[in-house]
Length: 258
Image (cartoon, rainbow, N blue to C red; front, side):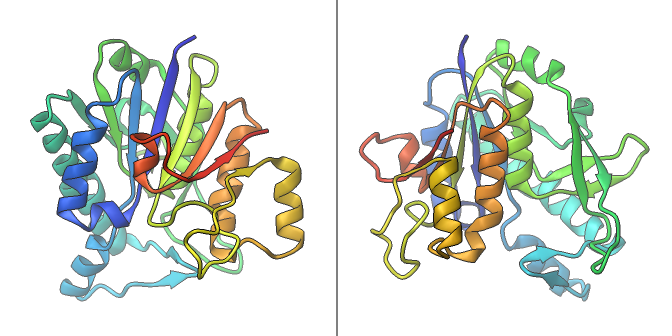
């Protein structure tokens, strides 16, 4: 069984054109099947402010009304996604941009309104890998933005970390899937003020201990929950750290296993 790398990049790379170009030039050289997932960075917030659309957040998560959905669709599935595809083509890496609606790849349902109404935010219900498998077998790289659909004509804003995790799970019966979350830190830190305090290995048992003792920074917990959700659904391993971990084996990072 071949190994498939699913790599998610965030705002620290997307918001910096030089960093994005460098990352994509290196990504293009990675051997074997691979799939890219990208977040939205700060561009959607900047555009919303220019268009006088209020930006509403709750605990770091965007509340997506219909005007906001229009903006993030333009930015995520349009500007950012197509820019990434064009840069990959410039590096002789044949890529196709995807939202969850394309090829019916990721179906979500609108998150129910409870104490907080997140608006047009989708929780993933199904991943269809057939179209993506054909592309990967023909050495074409899917590049996903953080937009899904509900199979009834409605686009939905969906967390990019979750999309990466669900894609990795969806492919786990076809490939040995490895999931990489690239962000601005060296990994999961024992001390948020010390970039060198990387916890290099976490498993299900040690994660519980780290959580119980409040060692892990609270903002990391949603990302780690996505990691363990993937591990519990047959993903081989999950790595968290700077993108250098993909290209240099000696780069310190966090590896999560069962």
